[in-house]
Length: 552
Image (cartoon, rainbow, N blue to C red; front, side):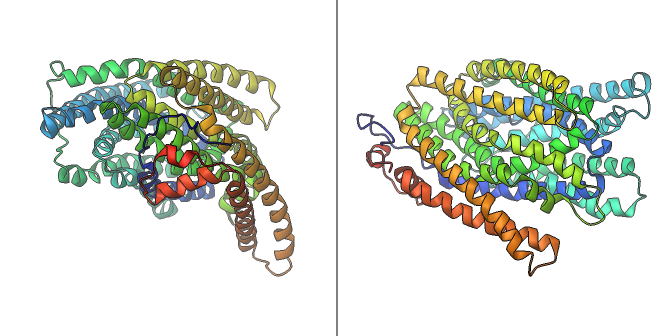
């Protein structure tokens, strides 16, 4: 089997894995800190209504982050900023463009934040019954809405640095959110009264402080690269602003529909059960760890990479890079899908159940059900993270927007249907199932749309890797299940400390099943595996030279 047809044009793909590794490593620090944060949240709040209320309230500033921050704005801003840097005005003109975008962004979001706080006050005092599960959301929302303009400004700084090929610091910036939240939970909450409402409000205030920190930590890197993140006017007369907002317009609609749907997912989950949003949040934290390390890292690196290739009119390299990225993403993502799918309950018990904590065995079962269903979606989310930046680099924001809107519509309909029809204790699983089904449909649709427009990705360039990875996942899953059972029984004879036993059994199962995965991949996807290793070594080989080898 061959990865790319021998007749395909010989083109060099961009060596993306080295930069992806940098972003992934920095993101790993943030994700691990996020996992520690959730472990502490589980200890102090369990799946209480306060944890559920926090998750729902925190989605609102994240809505604006996705809408006007690292989502729509970054996707529209990075290609225009890259063109401006390489244009006649150079970095000085790009600097002015960034300052005007920052000024407009802060002005819009400050006004929206003020209106949102007033609306939350009105709802709290006039509309929502005191003491209800819904009343717990509004005080937290008023605190955390101020995070929206700050995190969007931080996302703009991240986009500028990524466009200038600087990935480490912006990828590390989100860790400050988790570090400050950890400090609030572990350092402040134990010092105040044992009142979950007071403690969760302390955590909410730490989110606001983290917004300032994420902006401040990126300013030195911007300054070293000749960018001063000022707030300027002159928005109406700047052609770059017009280009950005023309590209953003359809995307804002799609992202806003998607983010509103995400917020509604939390509301629907709270409607299903007061513990459901919290259980979903704990499951997502585990699932997002590999997704952040791989999918988000690929997306971050690929957008400026594709933008540069499109600017240089090097479409053969775009094709080569997207196919290489898909193969690499599949090979790297697949093994981290198996663990939360097969070993969900042991992982959750190890992480979240602690002595004298609020997270119970029943909470573990609820969380396990969600995680096991969500795990396969990681693979398809990663595929979307590879495909979507190609459209953005081609200045085509309409196609991914249309796909997202249709996906959101299906997701919302399935959510309502599942919550109404699935039994108690499983309704929240329906929300995860609909998310995964939509991600599969979106991945297939984006693949087909990109192939019709550019001819890439070629299915026969990726199909051998898909087949090989699928076989490797099946083998790894069987090895993980059987080895965990055997190791748990064997270690129980000599180790009586529960956490040490759980850790050693999971680690041993992970090592054994990981070895099985690598062996099968080596046998069935040898060419793609060599391609990944060569990219890490930064060898300057062409896709054509590497792809004519058999993928055996």
